[in-house]
Amino acid sequence: MTTPRKVHIKSYGCQMNVYDAQRMVDTLAPEGFVETNEVDGADLVILNTCHIREKASEKVYSELGRLREAKEAAALSGRSLTVAVAGCVAQAEGDEIIRRAPVVDVVVGPQSYHHLPQLLSRARLQGRALDTEFPPDDKFDALPAPAPAAIRARGVSAFVTVQEGCDKFCTFCVVPYTRGTEVSRPVARILDEVTRLADNGVREVTLIGQNVNAYHGDGPDGRAWPFGALLERVAAVPGIARIRYSTSHPRDVDDSLIAAHRDLPALMPFVHLPVQSGSDRVLAAMNRRHTVDDYRRVIDRFRSVRESIAFSSDFIVGFPGETEEDFAATLALVGEIGYVAAYSFKYSPRPGTPAADLPEMVATTVMDERLARLQEVIDSQQSAFNRATVGQTVDVLFERAARKPGQIVGRTAFLQPAHVMAPPDIIGQVLPVTMDALERYSLLGTVSQPLSHPSAARRAAATPALGA
Ligand code: SF4
Image (cartoon, rainbow, N blue to C red):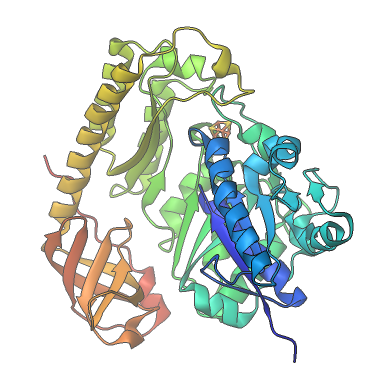
């Protein structure tokens, strides 16, 4: 029997990179690779990069510097280490990486990683290999199904990519250039994947896409199905207790999605709906294609079918030309909507995007100060929301053993971590938990009524009211 080769994947950025990393492991498994958490001893290291954050490429090059030392150390001990760069930085700057970083053997874009086995062979024969095309073959058709053992090892909650790319062209964003235009997977393929996951212990799926609610994949009837219709079918897969989705665009919230929130108890009442700014002037400069009032109306539509629904969002602070008045409008919107979580960042220009050429850059000190104010408001809303959960009984999906012996950790409908003392066989179950206390961001509770049937999870979750 041949010794398995080891692959270590370091993933940065979004949920889709986490999913892609798992699928890379699935692609390499038939080639005799097993995953390792360590660079030491790995035969192949893949940096699965993200281009969204500031100084993304600089971070990749400094990581590559460390890998050059690891490669030299491996060579001294008679082993060979292959280095690959994948993800959005690979897509955007593949040729530059090949030119600047001799340590790199393979560069592969997010639409081509199903070609990894061939690229590794080509690198072995020719020294280097690069594939950043948008290939005509569908990578999802080519990717091998994950092995049951791999699914079980990944836990009870899984990501499933249903859509890739974006046609919105927000002026600050690289996604339309790195991931291409909006493409949706067919309904049947997604259902096959979800069924396989559920058959192997997955209880919660998060359907992901750069603009997930722009989903328009082919349905079994040959027509393009809206996202809400896909959600309905996913909710009907036996064993699936919870469904989430991310990331959605306010403009693509349609009747089918609102109906899904009305009709599907398995669809969690917690929606991530980026707004980026509370100022119409800034939204227009960002090319978000909606106003603040449009956004408010979308929120109202969700609330009209599920009063208890909670929202999180994304914010960019200090977009070029943002005035104190614009920023005050953002703070006002945060308070008005009552977000219970948010990702907030200082604006930083992405090369090649229209906003990178805008004048009126906001001073760093001003951005720092605004970001701190915004995060303080969001933190206080989140804390109030968490405090309001104490004393309530809410459903928790148990995910894994916690660090403290005897403790199991799970998540509420609103992704709040919840810890209970319980036997490990509750992992994978959705059980009602009475929350006794809040410790920093984590709830401590007691399982109040063991439920053994998956249908138990379909009860609507009790929703804590946001505190003052
Ligand atoms: S909608 Fe989202 S992914 Fe698409 S361009 Fe705008 S920020 Fe980027």
